[in-house]
Image 1 (tube, rainbow, N blue to C red):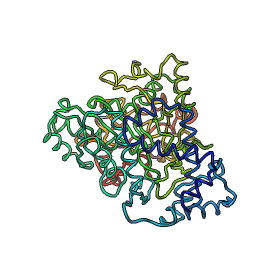
Image 2: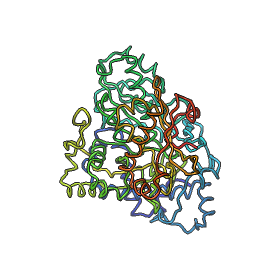
Image 3: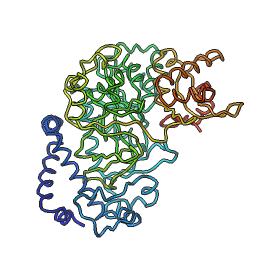
Image 4: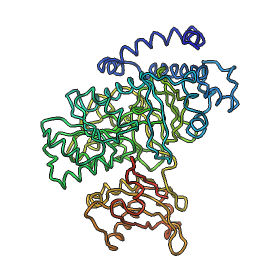
Length: 524
């Protein structure tokens, strides 16, 4: 079906509203200054409404032109022929890997059931859920994604040229290849992958007279700093920024990285949907750090969960986000350049959405000003105030992580973020631990207990007394951080004493992490 009948199907009012705006958005999106100007001045309400209409149009287009999606809706009992564009999203079921991706061939999930050869690429996801998946992209959608990531980097790190060292894994995986193409717009890029020796060699070769942007998974960037210290590279000579992603990051780890980096920002995305769905901004980082320091503010913003979520901002014109009854974030890509549309797609990340005005009002109730949040003492890093840019009025997205990324002991959920927070609060422990993992083990009395496995940094050895001290440290720290754990300690004290195990690099349960893109946090 051609786009012209689709426009008629949307109704005259909607067509008249959206089509001229499409041309405007495409033009404005060509230049960073134009796009930032739009977000600086466009009222958040109309921006969100326009994004919703664009998402409805994308959904209607998928219904009309994607064979697998029509079959999926039919299988879900949706009367496809009775659907109309207005309010269509409320009538459509969620999709995810199991219900949609696994059931239909890749060609059937593309527009008109065809895979165009020219300009098409296939990315592979990391397989963090157990099975790598292949995702197909058109040349146009990749081009827009690269441009948006480039704009995000300019907003966070400034307009001065960058030497970017891409330490994300190279090859078929989506992040590495696409981040190289995106950041090439901002300066020189060398794609080393996660190779410490190559990165250190490159920085020695170029010397400290440049602004460096190091990109990679958060634990790897920390590992790079440790290895550079051992190699006596002299990090203090270099002006460095970091862009991380692929997994969550605690503010304690950010504090650790900020001892060397001028700034550290994370992006949010999923290969299922696309990378660069949202990004940390100076305002979102400051908001999260203020919420860390003020539990009442954290509760007002994010609810009664004791965890501190990651906080991002996103563009509602291209990603329409919803939250379902299970507090999972659902995404519809609103652009029409997507080869295999994702409509109401659920990657099963827990989180929520806050519009800019609500965040500003909530902060005002606590005596803080969103437009000047970077001046708050509680938002500073270990070396002083963090870089600040006037915030854009985009909505905020907060994410805890995948729903199944937890262990449960006696009804108490223990999260990897809890352990990471405790590790990076202690400089000695963070120096000793290269990685960690969580599991539930049964002790000699048949009592299930939380087990924290530590993969030790090279050259560090753990004796039984050290393990006992660390176990007591984790128990006290979890009791202070995690309300579930604190309650369970009073009810099941024997079950809540953690077992701490230590392994040399690549040994024990960490053998399975050798060669993996992402480290596992939940060990089975």
